[in-house]
Image 1 (spheres, rainbow, N blue to C red):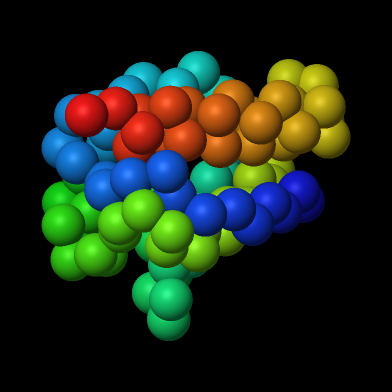
Image 2 (cartoon, rainbow, N blue to C red):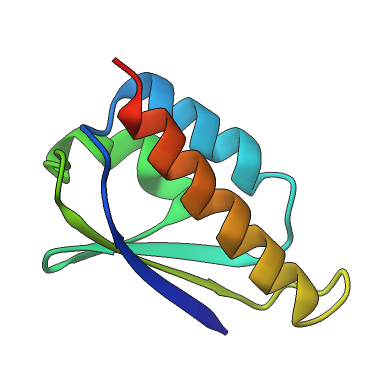
Length: 93
């Protein structure tokens, strides 16, 4: 399991969620995000993203676990790719 905490570059939008889902679907790792007191497993993000109230400076915690292609390495790669995409996608205006 790998965990990273960071601050959002900007608001979470429907377009950003689409980009995040595209990245996440490349991996077998289970990705979970925590924002405030809410924890969401990535498959449900498209139906609840607007309730998470993400804006610039919001603290985000992301966890990647149970990837198996190959074990351990995939979790690290998925986490890095997801966080990088999150920052880029939320930083677009």
